[in-house]
Image (cartoon, rainbow, N blue to C red; front, side):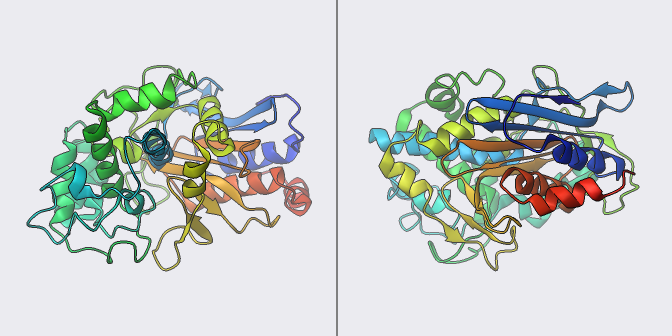
Amino acid sequence: MATTSNTGTNPEAVQRVLDDAVSSGVTPGIVTEIAKGDSRWFASAGKADISTGRERKPEELFRIGSAAKAFTAATTLKLVGEGALSLDDTVEKWLPGLLDHSHYDGGKITLRQLLNQTSGIFNFSMDPEFYARGQGEAWYERRFKVFTPEELVRIALRHPPYNAPGEAFRYSNTQYYLAAMMVEKATGESYGDVLDRLILRPLDLTGTSLPTTQTVIPGPHPVHYSRLESPDPAAPLHDATESNETTAWSAGGMISMTGDLLTFFSALLSGRILKPAQMEEMFTTVSTDGSGWLPNTRYGLGVWVEQKLESGVHVWGNGGADYGTFTLVMGSRDGTHMVAGHVNTDWSPQAYAAFLAILDIEFGSPAVAARLLRRPRR
């Protein structure tokens, strides 16, 4: 299904990517929304609910996973621009004693290192005990359990650092928890309230929220289908739509929609949220090589750059996954041409490749479009 407005896209090729993703079994449903200048174009394939046959729609809400890190970074950098925080502030300054009696020196880890993920702090999600009790089938049984940020940070502190502060990139949700906790100390408000005051309300992002312990998605949404980390592509699908997001919070616990994501990322990349000094910091990247993260990328402050589209164009944004949901939002560095996509199932290399193909179509690789259009339909 396509809702058309002229964005200069190759809509037939984009639709072929979506149709192929569904027919090949990558996902029950997939959507993309594209913004170029003042025009937008939405397209979808597959189902929001396979039991009822309900189709995917533009107004649907979904969990956005680690794309939430861009919102956390934007909120933090906004406060930096206002003088409430500095990127050189240490964890010890705002959270004194939190890292005492651990493997870490809070006086040497800065807010900048948290946001560009070079602090070396262990990812609490990878703690063996937490992982065994909180991932896959175990997660499904315990998906309504509530954790505090302090509890999860302390799980991370049991482990030695990945590297010395500032030495190397290593993806860790703990870093974005600490950044949000520093925001709370600096403002005296909850992180969710600061996010709402500085980002969501000024941009009128009415479909975007940080629900924390609220377990339902507050509006029309696709079923979030998960195989609960089973490597078997034939494993049964579970309805993972309802859960509390305290184990994701500022690192990945938000709900949004394609339209809101386009609005936010366009505003962020174009400089309508941050001052020039903070924009420069946001776009200052570190290599992700050797970290086991996405290849051909560099990471800034809450945004990353994909460097290997077939077209040769570099695109900026963020993405994220949670059980039953995968989101990617990428586009031009100036925010004038953006692509948002979502599948209502778990992250997979095939889903990521589908969105990269759409980005290649959008950003000037006629060869990709031609190959897609020559391919026989399944």
